[in-house]
Length: 114
Image 1: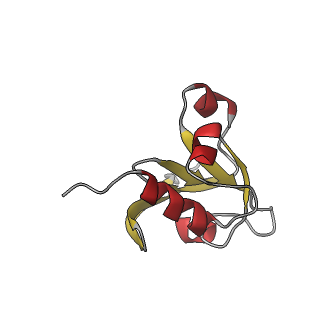
Image 2 (image 1 turned 60 degrees about the horizontal axis):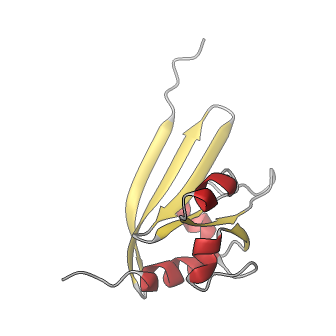
C-alpha cells in the first residue's frame, strides 16, 4: 500500500475576456485537468457529455493521448475541442476550435460583474 497522496492544484488564468480557474488533479495511474469559467468548463476527455447535457450545462472537452496527456490546464490552450454540450454550442463553441478559443467564448457568455 502506498502512502502517496493524490495531487490537486488550482490557479487563476487570465484571458482576453476575463479570468478563469485552472485545475489539475493527479493520482497514481491517472490525471485530469480543466478550466472553470462562470459559464461552464473546458476540460479533458475524462468528462462525460450525457449528464451535463441533461442538466443544460456548458462543457467542452479536448482529448489527450497516452503519449501526450492533458495534465495541466495550460495543456488545454492549444488542444482541439472534440465534443461539447448543446449549451456550450449555444455560446459559439465548435468542434475543432482550441481550448483557449472555447474558454474565451465562455468568458464572453457571462457579463462581468462590477
